[in-house]
Image 1 (cartoon, rainbow, N blue to C red):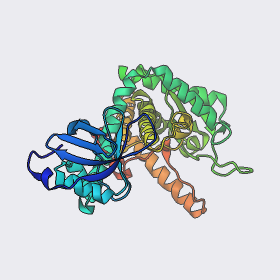
Image 2: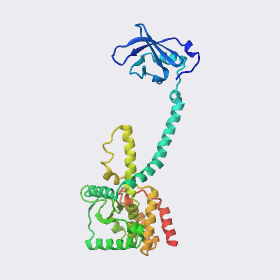
Image 3: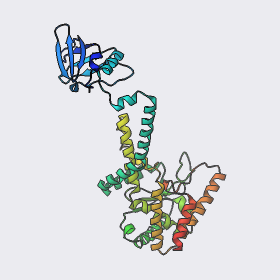
Image 4: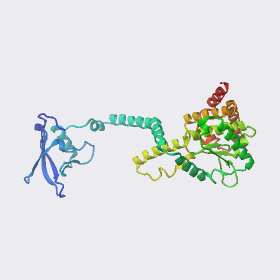
Length: 364
């Protein structure tokens, strides 16, 4: 903490207050630093000798008193911060590089920039990597519990009872089950349940749903809206591709990975802001708002291709989906609907990229 030189000889004694840690009464003292020893002398006969490395020297700041705790429970206090800093400097009390850096705006801005870069790198790479590790420890029963809760929270808010005849629903489930069984063990061993729901963008009262859409929830629930069936009328082969895509999200536990990532970010924020009350309570609602990353979507498209190939269907049929979605979007724009047609509640890669991928898969 001190420089072994004659610096202490040039430093005049510093007036300060000494507290013994037993009473609140301050005692006026003079401080001198001789080599490795701090001398604390009072007019009332007090004469303490403390090793300098047993003093918690206060950091230099722009405002406030200087308080130096001692190992025996006592402390030293100087109300004149500038006088303390000058005495400490002349006496050879060293400062860390961090303290020196805090005194300049340039160093502070550099540190802030590095912190932002570190936080960005942690969010971009660190959080997903940690989420993958944590997901291994989460049983699939957790996926089902979260998915069930989310599905219940959507009922009557975004989803209403399907108007599709029960026989038609069962036929679609049977076709999908057959395709899944032929898609290879990775998909065939994935647990799923296919649900149909009405979700109009306009309806009586204040009901406003998802429109043509399909999405997967953790645990295996795959929801298809009546509006999507209407959009793909006559093209059950395209619907198989859509369902294969959503099954890919289930198989790879994308929904739970996003929830874990969101939980990690929320927990980190709670550490900063001190509020853990909503870290886990809003999981079902988050599933309705989180968008899958484009990497997740590409992985799900790969599973859609595998399912279509297993069913003997060319992956090129998926171009029909994009054409009909584009036509539907144009029609809704003309109707001044203002809603979004976001298949799968997700942020998908560019349409041109996806079309090229499905066509390339068909050519192989």
